[in-house]
Amino acid sequence: MDASALAGLHTQVLLGALGLALLLGAALQRSHFCIMGAVSDAALIGDWTRGRMWAVAGGVAVLGFGLLAHGGWVTAAQTLYGGARLLWASALGGGLLFGIGMVLASGCGAKTLVRLGSGNLKALVVLLVMGLSAFMTMRGLTAVWRDRTLDRLVLNLPGGQDLPSLLGLPPLLAAGLVALPLLGFGLWRARSEALWGVLIGLLVTATWMLTAGWAYGAEHPETLEAFYAATTHNRPESFSFVGPSAGLLDWLIHYSDLSKRLNVGVVGLLGVVAGSAAAALWHGEFRWEGFRQTEDLVAHLAGAALMGVGGVTALGCTFGQGLSGLSTLSLGSLLAVTGIVAGGLLGVRLQLWRAGRD
Image 1: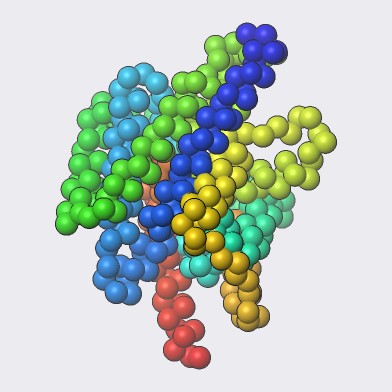
Image 2: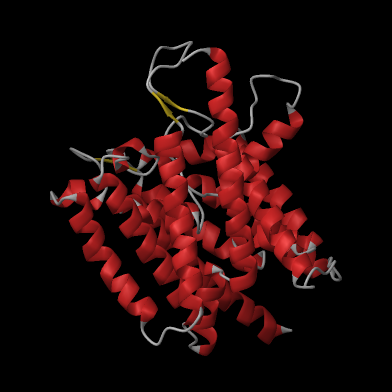
């Protein structure tokens, strides 16, 4: 593959990622899909509607990844989530911080993008602060803290940390064993929201297909090694929004640096905002909204900072770990999701305490 063919492939992959992200943004806006909302609905009023939607999306994504692995398209070990080094403390601790932060910031990373697309300027502040704190946790001040604390607690496994590798099961069998209970719970007393869960799960799977198949090249013209064009870490990936928020700032600040190119993560983030905006405008739901009280601003700033630090530490957000990572059946993803849910519940209790005090 020569340089011109590589540039063409890069553009094609980005356009494919943009199309999938536009669909996802519109689906999230119309369905009100939100993992923070699912946690708070279940905890406060016993409503599992959005929790079932999440279960359906997760079940479809798990089954989709299992089918791709069975067909030889991708393996968990090729992704960010399936390595032999299990950062268990980072997954749990980062997930806990992210879970608390998403409650304070009125939504996780995905919900922030949807709210921004619908005209909420509070979400713009959250996105910028989340991106800054994520960047710091990748390479700056909080990166040093992360490296010297939670990242030191590592469990080195003999193989991959995905359940098929740990249990010695075929990927499709393991996927079926996990997906069927999720789908059973999600489809129990199902209504129209189940269809949104199916669509979201399929979009996660389609992005795996895009980055593992279409983006794959057997020989890079410069390194002569296999590569995955336009991906964030030169490996297959699906939707995630905390790391890409830092990537967006990096691209904007260093735009004149030709080595800083757009990637699937950043394009996916922008596509979700655009898809949400299109859906909101089409249905007459676009409304400008901003901060009205200083206390509200402080809560959103704190929540955004916690989401950036926690999301990078846990290697993903409610989408990056809660759907994309979970679809690989990674043990680290399961731990991160556990931390996110625990943090979300703790954040809800904190908000109730604040309301009671007021």
